[in-house]
Image 1: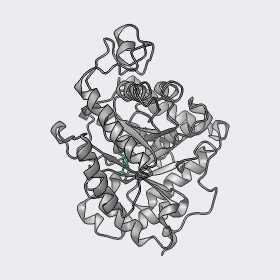
Image 2: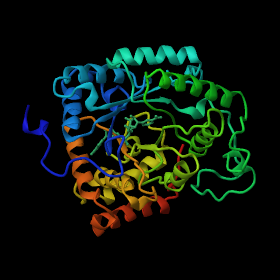
Image 3: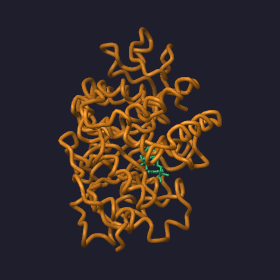
Image 4: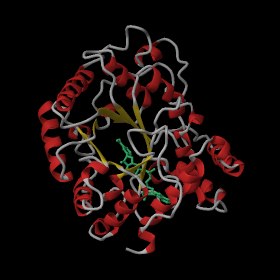
Length: 380
Ligand code: NAD
C-alpha cells in the first residue's frame, strides 16, 4: 500500500443528485484488452485501480460479457477485496445480448439471456446484479429512419421524424418490425429476473439517441406499462459531441427513466493522447482532436482534465437534467487516472458558479475548434 494507493483527503464522493449510483461509475471496459494490453490484466494494476476507486467512494462498476476478460478480472479483484469491501458496499452493472463484434453475434432470445446472466453471476462471484442492461439495442431493434437528419441533436423534427421516434401520440407503442418484437421479448425475460430477485434494475444501452429514446418509450407504453429503471448512453455527451443534452429531458419527462448513466466523457479515448487503435472516429476527426490537445496543453491535466469536468458538470442542475441523477461512467486504467477524476469532480461538483471562468472558457475554446472544423456533434 503506497501513498498513491490511498485517496487524497477532500470532499467525499456523494451528491444529492445521485442517490442510486455513486456520482462516478467505474467503466470496466478498461479492465480488458479493449483498452489495455493483455499482460497488464495479469499485474496488480487492476486490483490497485479498483481498490483506489472504491476507497474514494466509486461504488458502482459497469461491465459486460462483451468486454473480453472484464467480468472475470473484476470478479476476481472484488473477491480479493471482499474483507475491505463486502458485496453490499458496491453495485454491479452488467449486460446481456451482445457477445461479439458482428450483428450475428447478438442473441436477445430468453434462453441466451438466462445463460448469459448465469455466467455473469459466476464470473462476478455474486448471486445478484444491481443492473442488467440489454447491450447495444440498436443492432437488434428494427431500423427506423426519420426523414430528417437525426444526428444534429435537434428534437424539433416534423412528420416522419417524430413518428419514427415515437413522438406522435399513439406511435409510442408502435412495434415497427421483428427487431422491436425481439426487444420486447427480451425485456419481458429480464423483468422476470427482476421479479425473481436476480437483478435489481433493468434497462438498455446504445449509441443512437433516437433509437434509445424510442425503445425507452416503447417499453413504457407496452405491457406492463412500466418505465425502464435505467438507461446508459455513451459517447454522446463530451466536448466534441453534446447531443445528449437535448435528449436528456425527454428521457426524464417522457420516458420516465429514474436512473440515467452517461458514459465515455473522454469519447472512448478520443480526447486523450492515446486513443485505442479501434476507435471509430475517422482520421480527420483524430486530427482535430489532436489540435484540441495542443490547444489545452497549458491547462493543468490537459484535455482529459477539461473533458472529465465537462462530463461531470451535467450531474448538477446546470445541464438541464432537472436535478436528476446522471452519474458519469469513466474507464480507468491506473491510479493516476482515478486520482485525477476525483480531483476534477471535487472542483466542478458544487454548482456552476463554483466552476472557474477559466475552465468554462477553455471548454468553449475546445468546442469552438470542433465547430470550426465541422465535427461538432458528429457521431459514427
Ligand atoms: P472513456 O471516455 O471513459 O475513456 C476511457 C479511456 O480513457 C481509457 O483508456 C482510460 O484509461 C483513459 N483515461 C481515463 N482517465 C484518463 C485521464 N485522466 N487521462 C488520460 N486518459 C484517461 O471511455 P469508455 O471506457 O469507453 O467509457 C466508459 C465506460 O462506459 C466503459 O468502460 C463501459 O463500462 C461503459 N460503456 C458502455 C457502452 C455500452 O453499453 N454500449 C459503450 C461505451 C462505454
